[in-house]
Image (cartoon, rainbow, N blue to C red; front, side):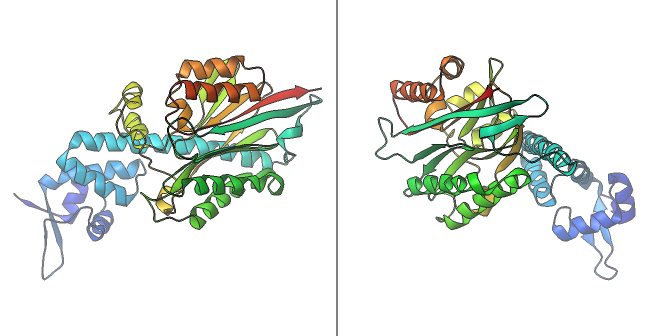
Length: 363
């Protein structure tokens, strides 16, 4: 096959010679031949497909290290590579939405809007009203597991649920929630997201238990500030919102099954019974790569009801039953009690933890 100079190959692939030299150094796109005397790089036409794929993936912002993995996968299984690209883009969209929330928050803070005084007495600007929180939390060992490794907490500013795993899972989940409880009085206003991120990082580093396969915990928590709440989430514990009669999930599971659903290789219905549905892609397990949490900000409206729960609830209780309880329970205590009872009635095969809070208006 005829060889192309680096200039000719650059024009054909729409990559610059400088980019081709970089991709050679990184092992992404090796020349077919390098002249031993001049050092000139030569390519062949059958390398164009890989070069164009590299260029396309760079345009969507994929990191170079991952581009190499996708290109190698494409040579073996193009359909699998397509699914991997889809999963990557789903994560980009989720993280972009989270950054959008943060931008809106920062614009408000830097434009001179007042910092919040805590959700227990949040002022609705210009309306002469205050929003108070009613809250409750509960956890149960279930009917099968020998110990309870779930931790649930509800306080004046914080809701938190953690689901521990491994031999030291109970300690891990308790430590994660305890670290956030300390933020109720110490973190306010614009510092809330940084405070949550720092606390999660400290918990992960302090609780290192040998990385994946050892002990660790998932964590979903909400800390209120002003008229907003900051949500931190890692793993497959969940947060739901009841607003205007409609229940929606406001967290995204960090699991293998969820990544397959995002990529379109699995339906949500198939995911419910998938044999690896409990395999986590992110958790607080001492591994820096796996501990990166989602951080988001949400507006709070009077009448909102929030539910945080472990997978011991939503994997055994039907979604319609969870929605019914959230819509009909008179108080957070009633909702927590009924949801745990439903999980036990469904077999109680896992620990179960719930935290529920209502935003109510006071004149």
